[in-house]
Image (spheres, rainbow, N blue to C red):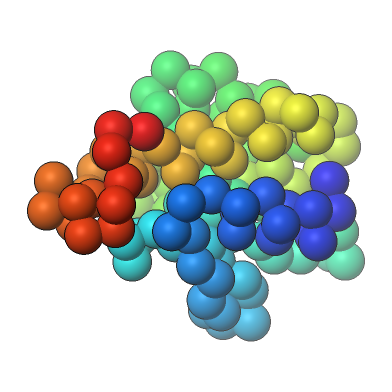
Length: 119
């Protein structure tokens, strides 16, 4: 997946916004990050929140790893950083899942303000 495809996908999700943090684009809903784009030795890398089971299944796969900084603080985030990693379709699914997890974590009031029902 190209960085541009990643950006388009993230911004296609309802109420998603883009910000830049430390020269890396991050994508948020309700002010909470659900995906981060960056480079790993010149190659694009993509970081996303994972559920408990997904995290356990993905963290040791080639091309994937617990996200630097985030995972070291006990958060369940995965970074797709090298081949073989995930297919584009799998990555799209995990980005959507990350978005849904973040939306679920928003207060009912915040979800209502944003016009978001249950993801």
